[in-house]
Image (cartoon, rainbow, N blue to C red; front, side, top):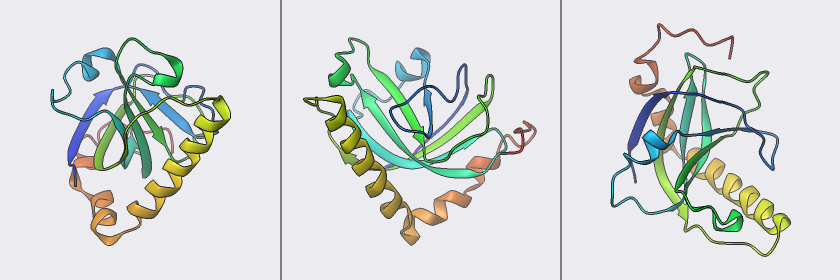
Length: 151
């Protein structure tokens, strides 16, 4: 199990994604300060925006080979549909496990299928008791002064 807690002030939230759920791209300052030995790939865990509810998430850390990115990125896909975009909110995440290595895909449809599979696997694993308990960790409430717009 991986336990990587991160709080950061978000610049942009709820970006366009090949799926209908919410995605947040971490700023370069966060990506540049990841542990040097972190493996690139797809992770799963928990995410909370502001003072809102904690939701399941899938995260990509790496270069997104399908898009041929030259800069390492860290994208959090929150498995929840929000009513609005959020700017300047705090995103708190806990990475609890690893799904797979990053890879390129022959088509966007293949990528979307893989994303759906990653989400299904994350949902299943996060339902396990050893991961469910992390959803209620005090880590997610350490900044409760920040009001989240009803989410």
